[in-house]
Image 1 (cartoon, rainbow, N blue to C red):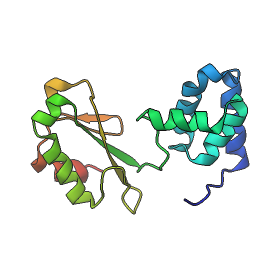
Image 2 (image 1 turned 90 degrees about the vertical axis):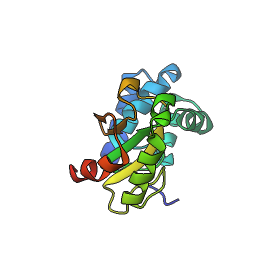
Image 3 (image 1 turned 45 degrees about the vertical axis):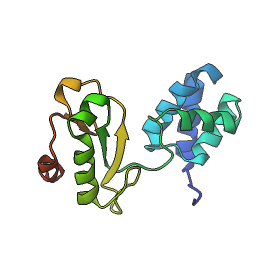
Image 4 (image 1 turned 60 degrees about the vertical axis):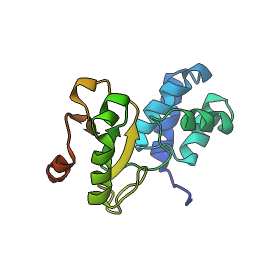
Length: 157
């Protein structure tokens, strides 16, 4: 994977974020949330700076990043799409909805469209089981989504 060049002002912003949490190793998850908010994802270069500032190993940071599904080491699209695959959503046809998004976007789960507009992922439960199947795009939640709804949803963006 190509090395990511982080502008010096962003490096300083990241260091300041770590300092805001007193460079306390127990605050690593909070720092990583902030860093992902800053960069949109957590490339190796960001993880290395965080590890250095928080005085923990890069392996430890990497372990946390890969353990929690919220964190991403790949850039997400401008409009990240997540399809809930929890039990209620799955039983009500989430897999067919996912297949329709894959067909329209021509990407697999975990990928971003070449134009950087959309990324596609699955998650375990949104907590809106009464609206199953559920799709989120950014902060927006779509309930009772059918495969026929996918084209219209994408046209909104």
